[in-house]
Length: 202
Ligand code: MD3
Ligand code: FE
Image (cartoon, rainbow, N blue to C red):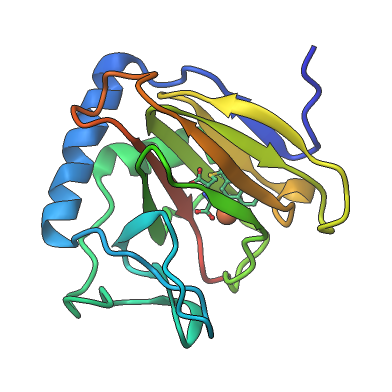
């Protein structure tokens, strides 16, 4: 039996193949308007291995100046495209929130990309949950406590899985250790897409 931390809900295979394929089309349309770019670590300027873009009224960006939410794409300076309706429906169905998400971060992992252990605390609202959708190749996801030194556990996220982080898990350390290449045929050139939906403002 896999015992998960309080406030973490993992729903394996929530989306069927057809729903996943429709979402990929939605995200391709977003990326045509708001191209993927490579964010940089604050101060060092070292590029992250994950490429990113956003949709929604606010998008999360990282550059030498820091991490923040902003209304415009950092490269094109255009407002972010709106969040696809079927993603808003998933949020409304699963989170129990009365308001729609304000931000959807689109992370693209090629087969070598990973994301170090971190906390998500750039939102002014830390009480609303975060909802994540995995599409494409599987990954090894790592999840710990609210302090970096606490023990972590790892589990695999597959295409169509949804994770909802709320309550005590909202400030937990987490990361992506690795991608398992060629474990899905959803994306024609392989890789993994993760979508995270959030409320940013209280
Ligand atoms: C746990 N993304 O974008 S999604 C991120 O797979 C991020 O791309 C990972 O961590 C990815 O910040 C993990 C699952 C997730 C998202 C938000 C969380 C786990 C979380 C917020 C708090 C705790
Ligand atoms: Fe995160």
